[in-house]
Amino acid sequence: MAISGAEAVLFDVDGTLVDHEAAAEAAVCAGFPFVPDRDALVRRWRELEAWAMDRYLAGALTFAEQRRLRISHLADEFGQGAWSEDRVDTWFSEYLVQYEAAWRTYPDAMPTLTTLAAEHGELRLGVITNGDSAQQRRKLAKVGLADLLESVTVSSEVGVAKPNPAIFQAACDALRMPSARIVYVGDRLRTDAEAAIAAGLQGIWLDRDETGVATMATRITRLTELPPLIRG
Image 1 (cartoon, one colour):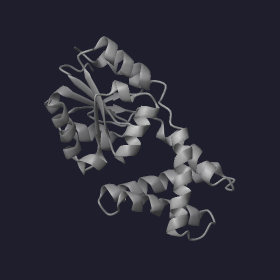
Image 2 (spheres, one colour):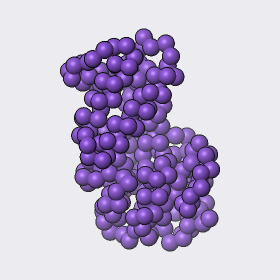
Image 3 (cartoon, helix red, strand yellow):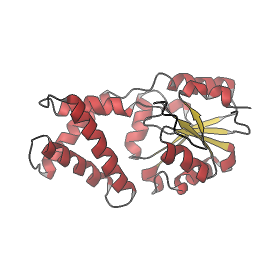
Image 4 (tube, one colour):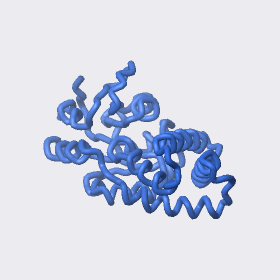
C-alpha cells in the first residue's frame, strides 16, 4: 500500500531504530553475573520493565521510581534480598554504563534513513520517543543518527507519552505541518502505529517479529520496505 502526500516521516527509537532489547540484555547480564539462567533473567527484566513503564506512563510512578521498582524486584526474585535505595541507584549507574556501551542501530535503520534522504529529499525526518530526553538524544548521537533527524520529540520534554495523542500533536506543531502529511513508524502496534492513526498521522507498524496480527495500520517487517512506499 503506497503512501501519498507525505511531507515528513517520524520514527520511534527503541525497537525501531535502535536495538534496545539487545543492549538491555547485555547490561542486565553483566549486572547479575551470578545468575546461571540468563534467559530467565532477561525475560523477567523485560517483564518488569514493561510493567513498571506502564505504571510510569499512567502517572502512578515517576521515571526514577519505576526504575528503582523493577531493579528491586529483580534483585529480590533472584535471591539478593531487599536492596536499599542507594544500592539500587549504584547498580543502575553500573547498568547504564554497560547499556550505553551496547547501543546499536538495527541493520536496516541507517540504510532506510539515508535512502529516504537521498531519494525523497523533500521529506523531513525525525523521531517521537518515550523516555528521558538527555538519554534519548545521547543515544541518537552515539549511534550516528542525530545528524539525519531534523525533529526530536521526547515524552519527558512534552509532559505526556505515547500513546497520548498530545505527544504526536507536539511533533506536528514542531514541524508546523498538518498531521495528515506526517508518517509515523514504530514497532508497537497500539502505542505507535494505531496511536499515531488516532492522532491523525499515517501510522505504520514495524512488525519485526512477523506476527501478522490484524490491524488497519500499514504493516512492514523491515524498515527497508518503507522507502518504496513513499510517494513524492
